Amino acid sequence: MKRSREKAASELFAALYPRLAGWCRRLVDDDETAHEIASEAFTRLWARWTSVAEPQGFLYVTAANLVRDHWRKRERERRAMHRATVEAAVRPQTEQADPSVRLLVQSLPERLRVPVLLHYYADMPIREVSVLTGRKEGTIKADLHAARELLRAHLRRSLDHTL
Image (cartoon, rainbow, N blue to C red):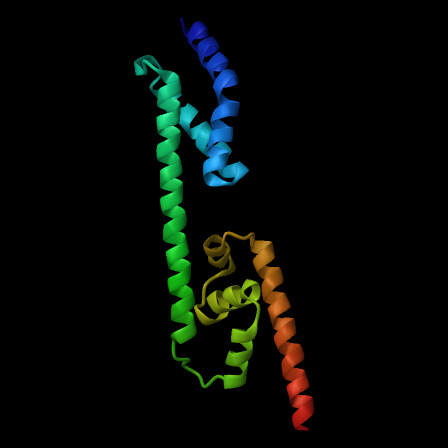
């Protein structure tokens, strides 16, 4: 009995997983997330294997619910990032920051400005900045480095002109 159950589940997985993962991919626009969702749907099916009358329908309904949860999470992250960026931009500085530095940060390209605002002005760790922006930690570190180099070069030019 157990062997035939495993064989049936294995055949169902081989037949439906590629199509289910592809469907999820079109909905979430990310391969890794799509495979996680499809795998989770199969895991949940396996947990209820004996009580599910229509496995394919169960898989697609479960995957649709997981996709919806993913979309909701992304929207919450997007709103949190927007809120953190706005708060960081309008928060009065405790120490008197050079207004030209603030203007320079605001003039950075968004790709560099957002990590600078979140990391340095909102005091978020790089890992959290990575999650909020949906970019890898290494990319955030590289962007922070590039932003510091741009700011350093501009400040150096400004100092040279004043001397």
